[in-house]
Length: 253
Image (cartoon, rainbow, N blue to C red):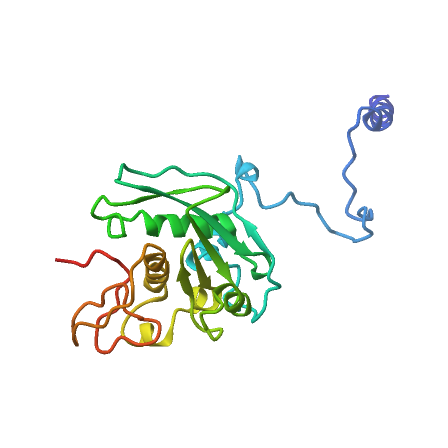
């Protein structure tokens, strides 16, 4: 009698459990849902709150920052010539005798993070070693009309924007009201600068300060002598003549 009651209770329980949403585990000879025998499902190797953890941050931003805002250092000879203004405004970080406004532009076909490029340009211009080291000038960024336009352009577009100055697709230029930075030089530096012991990062400071130096009215100068620190208006892209590479208007004392 007890055995019959036990079997009856088990049968009733087997009928009620599926209705309650409880699945019965298959027996050793029962096929698993995917048809595999003797296979047991296990949860993913995640315990506790681990499933809530955020994935590691992508290294892309650091990578772009190190390349001066460029997504790739493989710069096309001609990026199409279409320029776009980097949006945003940024006040001068300190008082000065004069505040010069700067509009930053990039050639659309380059593949560049314009805001990162603009950030690096403005950081260089307003660095304590920059043209404002003596309190004569500070720089503010705008996306409207400006005192100085600074443009990152492919070699072919640099040639067009700098004409009649002959840049030969290799160098940059600074003229009244604007500076054009050759993206190939921005990406790679120059062989002469690097061979003299400089780095690409240092060269970018030099490129901004040298070309903006022309906009501010400063001419080229010569290396004062072998072993001396090169003034920023030396044509360090082409050669150092024994001078030490330098990207800053304010020379160390």
